[in-house]
Image (cartoon, rainbow, N blue to C red; front, top):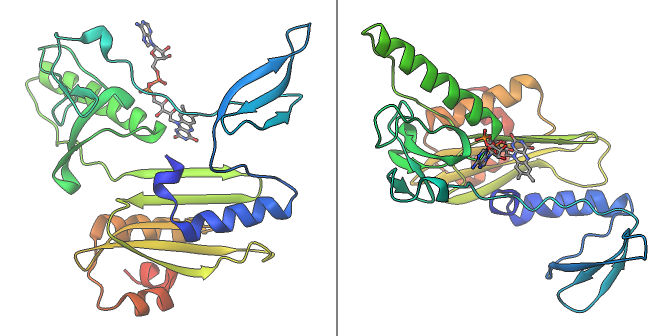
Length: 237
Ligand SMILES: Cc1cc2nc3c(=O)[nH]c(=O)nc-3n(C[C@H](O)[C@H](O)[C@H](O)COP(=O)(O)OP(=O)(O)OC[C@H]3O[C@@H](n4cnc5c(N)ncnc54)[C@H](O)[C@@H]3O)c2cc1C
């Protein structure tokens, strides 16, 4: 998720920040295996480029892919997930798909999407249950209208992203990894409109403001002005 979301400018901040703390980020290769001692404890990580790294502990965070093979040929699929409507109903009556596995209509972008994030996993479950309950009572509920939202917290860092990471990007703020209190971000601009926003170190109000921008998709005259205004562009929307 993160490499697809982070621009080079955003990535260089985190790389610099961690490098300053003595962390070595190995790039341009992948892990290809492990070596163990006679007790079966890990001693080394083998890299694809032939190098090895000594290790006492190995933590693997490599993501995953939704398991849809279980339903092969039984439920309609789209974009690597189970296709649903705006109420998470699949092509089979009374079968619902929620969370990572669901490819659903994202109203905001008029597109079928899958979202791998706990926020959507919870909200899609809520939507499906509400739709089922409403149908039982002969009522209906509004279509799912999700604004993509990702966040991460690590040590004293904390970022949030809302919207779509497509189009051109501009950076704003103080992204010097040596700053005592770095606060910076990025906007994504497509067809003259701000469609996505990222902020590191934002206050709750600033995080709210970038969510509002991503939902409202305001037009921008110039990328330079946007870069200069930074967060104040969002807080005045
Ligand atoms: C490394 C990693 C880091 C992540 N970090 C974050 C983060 O920081 N913040 C965030 O919001 N999201 C994060 N995510 C995404 C988040 O974990 C998922 O979006 C969320 O767990 C999806 O929930 P879910 O209920 O759809 O699926 P899951 O949580 O994957 O639940 C599906 C369950 O179904 C079970 N299952 C599969 N097949 C069968 C079967 N045949 N029979 C019975 N059970 C079965 C699985 O074992 C699993 O328990 C991360 C994901 C990964 C992989």
